[in-house]
Image (cartoon, rainbow, N blue to C red; front, top):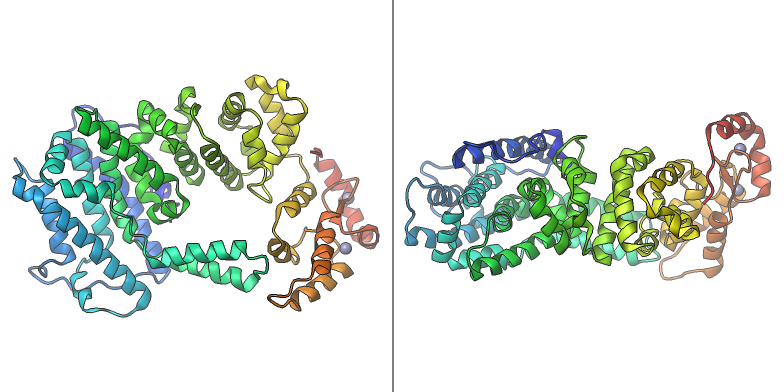
Length: 511
Ligand SMILES: [Zn+2]
Ligand SMILES: [Zn+2]
């Protein structure tokens, strides 16, 4: 879902507003970036059968329905001329009504049962809900006077923005709980994993939180970028910061808000001063992950990463560093190992090491069972910790990472996998034994089939562990590994022809 962001050019605009633009013009310019992504969003939703025709739009629209509520909010927030206290006072109830009707609509997407309330979900195109509210949020963000008048006339709106629990819907929560359970269950099998994935896929069609996150994001960002005039403003600023960091770094929220929140976060990303404060409050993982997931090579997130002032790296916690490193692993997964040699990547790692030393590298070495860059770096750094104090020592080290043989990576991955993860990879080529007719692989596959839930067999599990863990790579090319000498010998006739070529191709780097 998130990937829709840059593909449609939302990221093209890497700087803030141009001078002399009126507020309404600025809002329109920001919105045009969001529209492309939303078109992408509705296309992908309709392809995944996640759409449902909304209730018919009557003329005039049904009272207290989605269309009428959105129109009322819009007319109040964007009203030409002053807005009365009474008008502002209507907003909290209208927003909660919209949130409730979004829930009704997206629950119907899943249950296919239309309740009596469904007739109020009368929006021709559901993505208009998010966009209209985005327009309102941007307008308030760019007119701080109006925003503070709004909040002091309708204090309950402040509760809606800062304190109300975020409605993720039961499907997303269920998918997350299932995923957790499968991860924690040593006996989970492929069917369990498949069910968990299916559920996650399905829950992605619940866009209730997504539609609201434009507006929530815009208003929270407003408090970060506009100066605080009094103590009340300062308290709001602190609260907004905490909520925004939570929304943009918690995996479950990131999944639900997708590129809508990234779009709302632009002003944070293009204002270095604000970005430094956001980073110190724990938000840096959000930028790194948005950058990692961005499909556009030269977009806003990349520019923000490149222009990130060095001091943004201060005050990171073990938790935020782990989030940052998780993002870096994703970036390598998307871009390939060569990316580790780019000046930006080199600088990030140097920043982390020079401030926080070895520890974050050790903690991150268990993050991925295949992209083992932090395992590799931790091993190398521990050998000569002083050598890597200056930035220019880092590039040669990172250049070596691409030469770590696949067999070494898999062996390391095998060590940190859970027992169910190992059963999972048994049939996958390249783990344990490269000989296609390996008798031990077939024997273990039969044992896998015969497994019974609730009955674990330590002897069998140890056999599986040995099979993958003790595997030895071909000494010459290190491109292929075997569970034992017999398999290596049996495979030599086939492997001989590719071995020399592999050996010449690979400059093997042991860890
Ligand atoms: Zn074998
Ligand atoms: Zn070989």
